[in-house]
Length: 67
Image (spheres, rainbow, N blue to C red):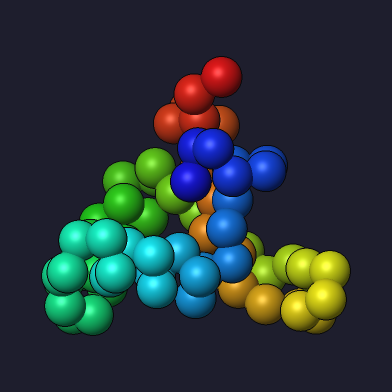
């Protein structure tokens, strides 16, 4: 996600990529996402995405983004 524009990705696309690359279950993904969010490493926001419309976006918090 750090390489994505604005350090964020559409949540469904992020989930698809993680599940594809790691082979983990959706349940494991959801638990990890919840932990990362609870620890303040990622945040979940709704925003307008060109050609998609309003959707959920997962973003790195400023403290976790690497330049």
